[in-house]
Length: 463
Image 1 (cartoon, helix red, strand yellow):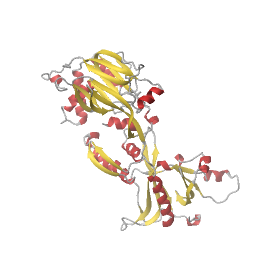
Image 2 (cartoon, one colour):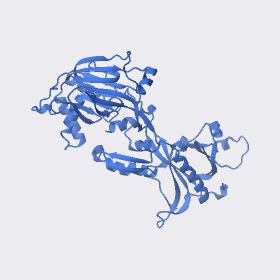
Image 3 (cartoon, rainbow, N blue to C red):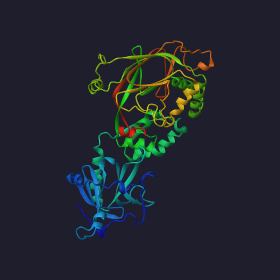
Image 4 (spheres, one colour):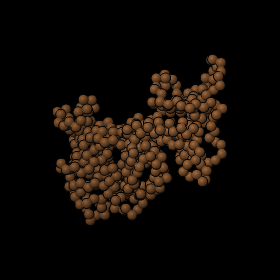
């Protein structure tokens, strides 16, 4: 391994034009990289060791099994010199935070594909405030082709060893979302990062509630970096069935006001998404009416042995499983297996629910006056408790059966205000999709059924 003394230090700023990192990339803040755990570094097996220029300092760089560490090379000083100890403080980045590595070259106008080698650039994922992630860079400067090639190959080998990181993706875009700017956002912000990480993509066309709940924040770079870094979460999923027939899978559902609003919005697809949503909400509130229902539910049992057995798919015929039933006039019924964070509910439609705790939130709004119901809806956008109303009830459940007792559902196709569903069918809002069902719907939770890219559970706790 070639070693270079300080007098042979390479300058990254000497003439010519260098390859530039993506515009979002920023230099790695050294304050975030300082390590107080020297014992861990000493116990780590060393893969490579060499000298690179980092910033403007020649550094002794050590590549271990879990981290890349470096310390500025300083002139010899008397033992115990505190100034020397401060200047030579070790810094590091964890290998799991690196998502790409490139050879850094100085390119002239005539050299589009190659140029003078300057060293290696590492692309790193860093945590910011409020659950956000950002991509940054760290340059390891050394002019030796052989030296950089050895390190480059070792970094590529390390990156290939992370099992959860995708090699290819099928991308679904909804061209109507984000004020019809979703396609532009993808090609300007998402695709460059995916290409940088070496991920092959195949774009086709396709609710932001799931993505927001998974990442904890509506931030496209954060969502992209969670995918690139292979941050995988096991997520609870619901099945929706009627008369023993599976209708679909999903994560959340609304019956009553939520279903009627979506059914109205679907009839005005010619409007923009925001206009259609606002119009449907106003019209549904103007024609607010309750549904006569019978709701049966199985309360959540947090016992460890019960949850382990159910996670393994065991039957739910235990004598300890006691179904409960409520009935009456309900304005809205919500069943949520995820928090359902969104723009109108920053803390979530079901803020006490988690992604994979094996339970659902059953939220019931009984019949009340229109002004009181509107107060309840407005609370979702505030920090106040949206459930602190006498007509709102919440339950933590594992299964739910919603049985409308009025087959006509109050729907008369000849009346304009009831143009929200097919005759004798009731509208459901399932993950933003309209589902029309004429009879009882059975919702059952399946704990940790699928794996999705997203942040850690700690990051999902509402602020």
